[in-house]
Length: 101
Image (cartoon, rainbow, N blue to C red):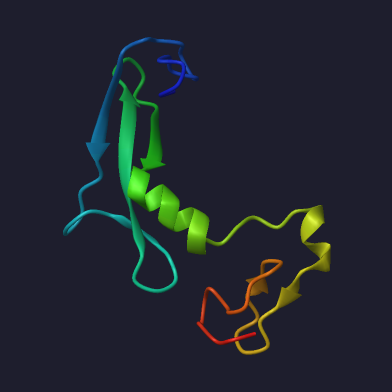
């Protein structure tokens, strides 16, 4: 939506945003530790279709400590012996519980 400037649902070019999603403060993505990602929305003003995106700093935080969808490449990866979280190749600590692997 933000790259094409067009709604993927109705093809309208009338896109509003970015708007921060409001909660008590901002809605934030739950990341291990203290790092967070603030979400911003883009909305089609014709049909109401909306997409959420992380802000730039949040995207960096997700890249560093976010949880990733498992793929067939993850078969050789191990799990944290303390909490069971999938450990990415080359990690020396668990991104979920913080224990050293």
